[in-house]
Image (tube, rainbow, N blue to C red; front, top):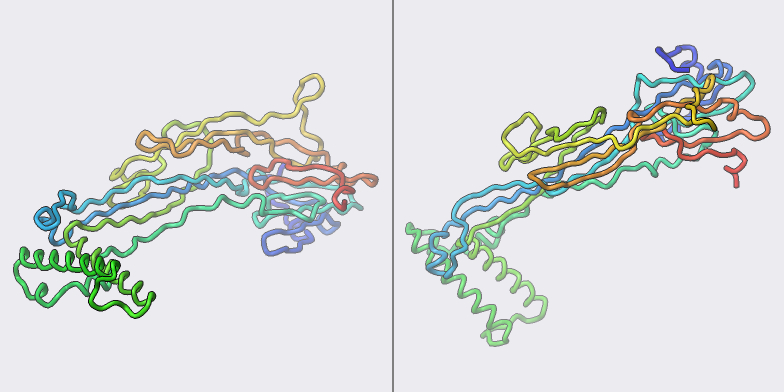
Length: 366
């Protein structure tokens, strides 16, 4: 029986027990007039967008890279670019207030229903429900930028007194280039064993070489520039309803990263939804759709939709999911749950409200 409002006497009279604060067991008792109230879910999609941002900055001596390093590849201006890296879809169920039902039983029976914390059914007459089976796909995590060679302690170590005092950019570049080649020569001598003074042991050699590498990288960055990359993550929640084609879900801005669809300072991320299959009522032997059983325990027969995410002509996601709101509601005869000889149990999918498993209670203990 579909409810238009909550019956207060039933809500108060329910026998409730909590399990790990996420699951509740409701028993149809005399106090609740042998009724249990529950909500079927709507299926929502959490769309997580991961972007990668690259920031390139010129070094202080980029104009002298050709003169001292014979390189034409020095970064000459600051450039920031952001690209869409990945898209992850997670589906979950949320309580649909317009699909609220009362499961009513005859006096003298004691079936129970396991519900999640949103009052959506997980099972009837089966206490062991594995919510882990509906856990979300692992999401990408934002990765902050790592320090550039110019942001390390080694970058301060290579600033000699002569370099710091000089007012000439050209002179400072010359000093930096000289230090760079000196470090390379010393490292070559150490590795070949020709150095005048060798480290006392292998560990000392390793630390010395690591520090020299950091200093070389800092001096090189003064000429060639630096490149930093980092990732960002943002999740958009979408409730599929009608079919859509290339609806703007979000935008990717080179400067601001992931922004909302209304922010025009970025390239659009397009969302398309297509109904692949609509849920249909079961039919009898003549092919006629069955009618809802009297007092039936409502569940969803979901449909299927495909969700496609595109950006700049590239497809990042094309996934088919089951959707409660693209299906129909049908019911199970409540007598089956209280049959004295062979009562049944049922497991529901909390994402769609569909039946995952149905069988004899006797088989649960096997």
